[in-house]
Length: 125
Image (cartoon, rainbow, N blue to C red):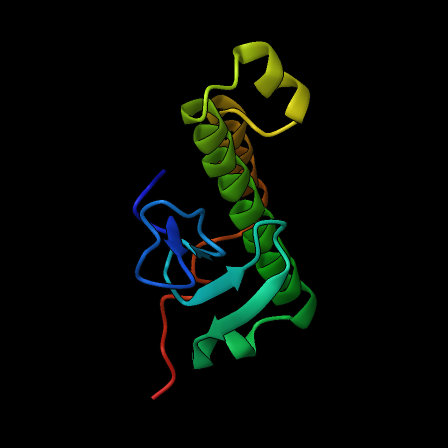
């Protein structure tokens, strides 16, 4: 996972043996962050003030994209957990959980499809 958006949090400090209960994904600039369940349902959203000037539909699409990204990364983490628990490749394929290649491909497509760069380099004073 890349450093710009990969993150997991857990429900307690004894989480080394437990699967995370919350996952985090952030925008390229770090100005939008979502905290989600394993399925990508938002638990919390952080949006920097300057992002609130964006078109509402564009902002909503970016938040939804980040929720999906978080769910994909959670699925990847769940797949790794099951692999460590002894699941065979065939069993993992039947789960429908994404592979590393699928997650990476989707993130590249999403970054190209969605405008993740600032809309302007000018700042209001």
